[in-house]
Image 1 (cartoon, rainbow, N blue to C red):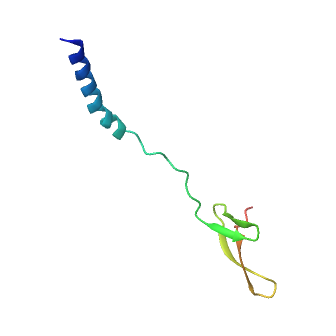
Image 2: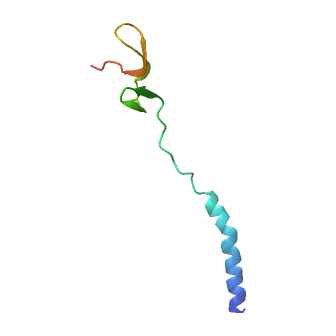
Length: 75
């Protein structure tokens, strides 16, 4: 056999095997997105797990337009 025929056959086999190996690759994992975002006076940011945002009120009971972050009390 000629060397060029062997190289062409080898190249064809490699090209056929390429899509099969590419399909086996796993999709990249993305970090989990935060469940809640609170916009407080300090800016908008993700809140810790287990906490939740609530509407903020001033001392007279009027809504401030900002969120407050409420977390359960840990003992």
